[in-house]
Length: 131
Image 1 (cartoon, rainbow, N blue to C red):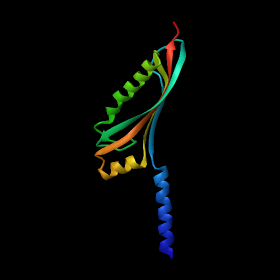
Image 2 (tube, rainbow, N blue to C red):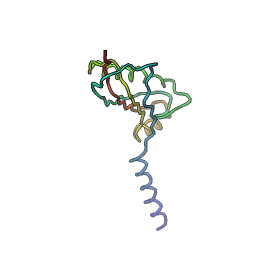
Image 3 (tube, rainbow, N blue to C red):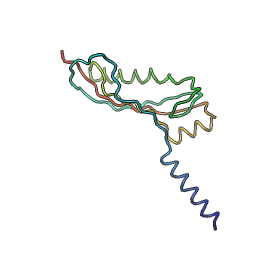
Image 4 (cartoon, rainbow, N blue to C red):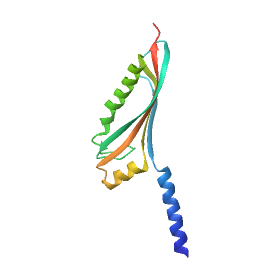
């Protein structure tokens, strides 16, 4: 009977990991300017971008990730599209959350860290400068 209880406990722990297993990196509130002119908020955005990394870990920092900066341009381009969509001048209060689901981490493990899929979740406010 003892091994049956151990098996059930193991399955419960595994189910918990499957439901809650993800890693996250978050960088928020960055604004790179000496003086921000007065502005009016014209909209907000909330978008997700699929990230394909190679030779690294899903959803986290890795010493040997040869494509770690591969997501910089797609994230920048996505924010630029949102600025154009709202006919704004800039994006402020931008938050970038890098996350990997259990499936992403499993794919990374099965491929021995060759393929490392994840998702970048980006939010922010589009502003128009007051002239």
